[in-house]
Length: 189
Image (tube, rainbow, N blue to C red; front, side, top):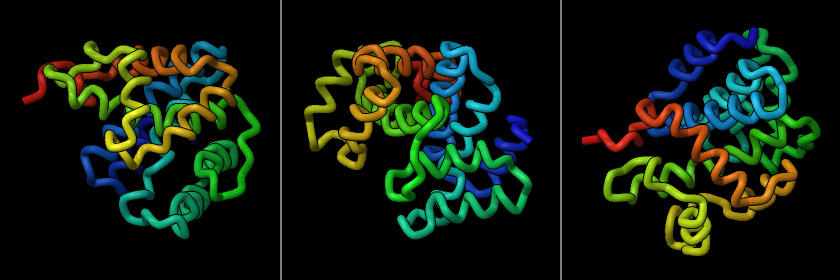
């Protein structure tokens, strides 16, 4: 039950927002890339990335997300490994990030959103224009993408045991593979 088609179906059932769907695709791309790098199950990690926020549009409060999603996944027979990873991506759940997959999800979630924001302010709205150094500079601008938690980005890279700039570059490259689906290939408009 870690089938990408089923995961996409679940995501689109609960998430109508195009930007949230694109966020899921961005995190999925980063997770798949890390799974390849670490010799892990690419499909499993991708599904976790795709589903991590599937309940957020309907239940965005800290009291509900990702708890409601976890209940739905359990009811529908999704494995504990997937459910636990998704629960661990939110600091406030108290679910520790113990596995490389759980650490990667936390590390990729906020960063994928921030990289997307960085690409959207480029003249061509393209990931090809985004460099790790420019992402680092934008992180210092508290007014830019203010909802993105910079501390989570820094902590996520540290927990993965990767230098921040290397992590940023790795995620940019991973997202370039799905740039067209994200609308960040320079052909938007």
